[in-house]
Image (cartoon, rainbow, N blue to C red; front, side, top):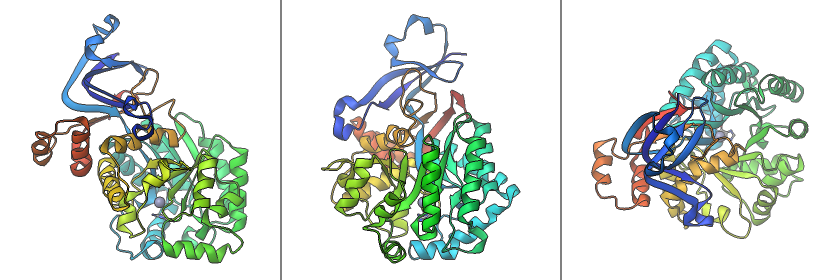
Length: 429
Ligand code: GUN
Ligand code: ZN
C-alpha cells in the first residue's frame, strides 16, 4: 500500500558547512510518499503532491519532523548493558569491566536474547542503521546478523579480532579469528541489507600478524567495511608506541597493514598529528566522532573543525559508542557534539549535527544510495521527531523562530522521548 506522510520534513543533499544552504532541504509542509516496496516514491511540498497519489492513505504528523532514520556509525553490541561503568580511563575501563562483560557473548543463547534488546533500543531511539562491533565470539556476530535480518535493518557488523592484551575468555588467535571472519562474510555479507565489517578492535589487542591478515581479508573482500579504534586516549597511544616501535604514528600502524580507505571507519581519532590527518584525508578514511564516550572516559575533545574543514578535510560521522558512550540517543549525541565543539574552540551548528547523524552516516557506511535522505528510490528508513515531546521541550519550542533554533533545542534537550515513530523500509516498528 502506498502511504503519504505529511509533516515538516528535513533532509540533506550534502554537508551544510561546506556546501552551504542549498544542502539543507527543509519543508514546513512536506510530503513523503512511501510505496509498498518500502521505498520512497516521491518527496516534496505537500501542495505539489502529484495527482497519482491523491487516493493514497494520508498520515499527517502536524508540526513533528520527519527525517531519514539516524545512522549510528560506531557502537558495541556486547556493551549494551554496561554503560556508566566507572573506569578512570579507557584502558582501565576495558580491563576492569568491558572484557569481563564481553566474555558472556561466548554463549549463543545469551547473545541471541541480547540482540533483540539491542535492536529494540536502537529503534526506540530512531536509529535505523549502524556500524556495530560484536564480541570476539563468532556465535555473537551470528546472533546479531540473524536478528538484524529478521528486522530488515541496514546493519554492518563483524566479529571483533583481538589476539593479545586481553583475557583468554575474549582472545582469539590470528588464524582462527580470520577463518571465523571469512566464514561470517560468506554467510552474511551482502545478504539482504547486511554488510560485514572486518573489525580488529584496536592496535593494542592485535598482533602484527593479525593486523596483516585483517588487511589481506579486507583486500580480498573490497565490499566489506573495516572498523577499529584510533588515538582515543593518551595511555592507549603510549601503549601503541611501545608495541609498534617502527611506526611513525598510531595511524601509520593501520596504514602499514592496508587498513585505511574509503570504507574504513576509525572510532574516536581525537589526538592526531598533521601527517596522520593527511593520510586519513587522502585515503578517504572516516573519523567517527563519539562525543559522549569521549567526555565520559575523559579521552579528549574531538576538534571537528580541523577534520571537515581545513587543508586536509577528513570524512566524519557521528556515533554513540555505547557502552563507552552514555546515551543511545543520537539526539543527545548531537547535543554533546555541539558542546564538545565549543570546548574544542570550533563550533557546530545543530543543522550540521543533524547532517552528521543522517547523510554523513549513510556516506560513512557507503550506503548513501540506499539511505540517509528523503529522496525517491531510497529505502524508507525514517524517524519522526516531536520537538514538543516533553513539557521542557514544548516550552522551549515556543521560543524557536528558525529551523536551526528548533534543531538546537532538540539536540541539547532531546532524547528517546522525542522519538515519536521509527520506520524500517516503510514499516512502522
Ligand atoms: N578501544 C578499544 N576497545 C574499545 C571499546 O570497547 N570502547 C572504546 N570506547 N574504545 C575502545
Ligand atoms: Zn568503541
